[in-house]
Length: 194
Image (cartoon, rainbow, N blue to C red):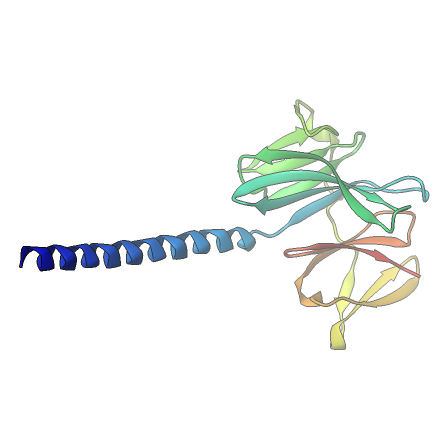
């Protein structure tokens, strides 16, 4: 009789442990999906003036629970491929990113405090006078029917299609006029105008 009660107790303990492990798994999966709720933020910190001159973009994104500030070079000679140059973990999600007027660096606004990161993504003391407040202003665009986006550049009108066009948060010029950086809520794309 004692042996039967012991086996029953062991089975009940195994069932409860299984339920607890499944609950922990669901909790961790929920935590992982929370990371995608953060919008990507970006600012162009260097515009390309010729084909050999690669634009540089500073991007905030949250990956694996970490707040990351990443500098990307967009290689115009290699099909506009993004190449991560530098990366640094920051303490929280920024409200805004801005370029600097004179240097390749990025201004980051976190909890109402501006911090400047230089081209090596090292914090540096710098007068806020050098913030370029217009650097994160999007080019004007309009969402058209059928997934088309209309943009006006240098007195020319361009139309392009993008799969999740309703998630566009900004369009920025990154070159001498024919290369655009499209910022979506959870993605970034380069667009070549022809």
